[in-house]
Length: 148
Image (tube, rainbow, N blue to C red):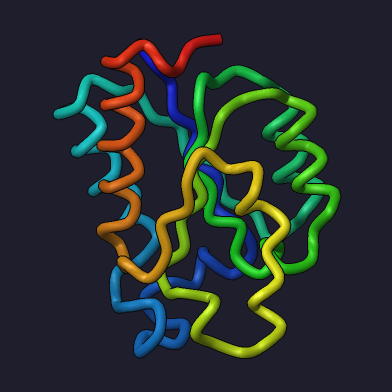
């Protein structure tokens, strides 16, 4: 069974209360429950990890115990060459997800260190972005496009 690592970056632990006009009212636990349920329907296994610390996210990636990842790097999307380097080093495909569309927000959010190395980027779709990412992974697995 394909194992999907769902890696959540800084401040995503505050979902549901943090700027709900931008990020919605769903908590991270609620989002993860929805992801887990959809993964079962699609025949995928999921593992979740969230940290407010860049190094912890990199350490988790370096375990290399997953087949593909869904990554919402939060603000690290715009600042972390180290996270990008770790993603390239572990040589696992990933889909980038953002609840909002960073390109429509503050100008500094137009910098994205992950987009060009991701399989795809799903932005501005809210919580549904995670399901869309899972569905994309399931299609790619079925087509034989994802393998270690």
